[in-house]
Length: 80
Image (tube, rainbow, N blue to C red; front, side, top):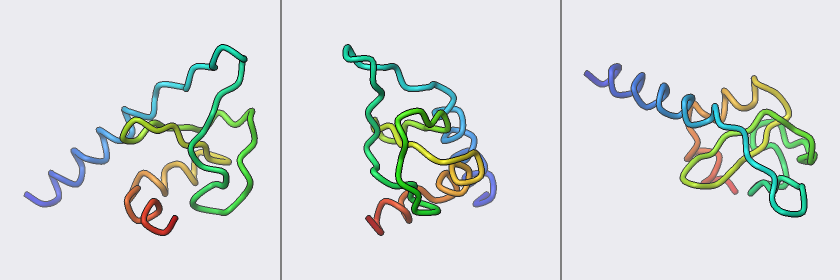
């Protein structure tokens, strides 16, 4: 049963990250994070590997960092 819950949560998290953030009126996308939570790289304005988690948009340098974040977002957010 625990595996089913974990899989369901992972699928929900991945699906929530399919929507790319929309630019604001000034044409920029604003991310909550200043650095990639997984690898520590500084966030760049043109990064497209993003996800929305609990209403906030996070950016990642690549798909692998985004996937790692999605495995346990609270772990990375708690370390902030």
